[in-house]
Structures are given as structure tokens and as C-alpha cells.
Length: 208
Image (cartoon, rainbow, N blue to C red; front, side):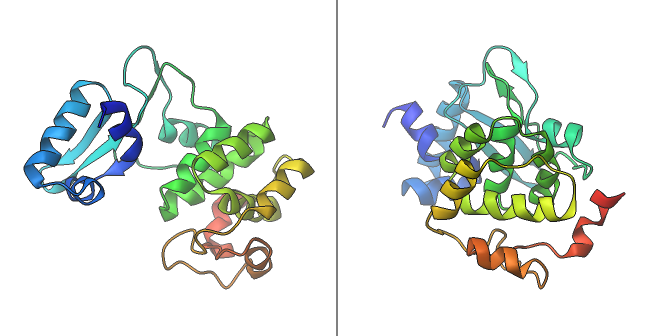
């Protein structure tokens, strides 16, 4: 399998064990594959020591001009700030708000997803948001979290064409965050057929 195809297959945040499982290979083979992908610019590493080694894999090579990464974008625009667990940068293209929201939701991490709500007021191109929501396979999640954000803070209004398209999408995962199911926002959860992970108390930072 070519390096670019491997990078596409493994795209996202991985551990060595996850790479082994996804490719069905031995530990030594997984290490060789990660080493090759890193040399070719498809992998950024973080952690190590007492913390697990993490591999951020992307089919877009780490080369050329460095642009703001996901955590940079969130900490610049959102009221909920994040500690950066690893250095995430985008090369040869600018990471837009429209891509950052689905990218954050795709990680299915509570704090990261909560912080991404603050980006909805900066969306300028709803069709582009729709494109990336589809690319990252989080269309229902994006729609539901937009409604949560809009009910609790100032946001730009989503155009109806994008909204209807997101609503028509088949639900793939009802839990936006694994095992997180709020007693608040149940109407939004029913509308989008997902479980909203946040309680109203989680969003108090956006009211300040």
C-alpha cells in the first residue's frame, strides 16, 4: 500500500496499538510503517515518557509554510480555552473556521468539542461547513451542536439549504461524546437524533 493511502487509512490521532489493529500487522511492522510515514511528512508525534506516544497522521504532508492549527484557532476565537496536548499545525493551506469545527468534533473529546461551539459565530461559508462536516462524517453532530450554541450564545444564522441537508443525513453515532448524555437540550437531541453531551452548566463560560 502506498504511503498516501496508508495516511488516508490512518488519518487522525493514533497510538501504536491503534495502528496495529487498523492495519492488522505486528508491532514491529507498525513501527516501521510509522517511521516511514514520519520520514515522508505524514506524521507528527507527541507524548512519550510517562505519557503514551501519540501519532497525528494526515494525508497532507507536513511541509511548506506553517499555518495555525486546530488549538490555535480555538484559543483565538472561542471563550473556552484549551491546553494544547500536542503541537498541531497545518501546512500549505489555512485551516478555516468551517473546517476546524468538524475537525474538533471528530475527535469526540468533551473539552475540545465544548470549545468548538465558540467558533459557530465566525462561520462565513455554510456550504463549506457542510462540505467538511461530510468529509469528517459528523453532519448530524455539527447540526445539533450548532443548535446548542445558537440557543445559548450569539451565532450567525445557518442557511436553510445547509440545515435541511444536515437534517436529512442518516445518524451514524448517537453519542457525540462516548457515554455523555445530558438531561438538558433534549429537544435538540430528538431533532437531530443524537445525544447532546453538555448540560447548561457546561456552557456558563460563554455567558461571561
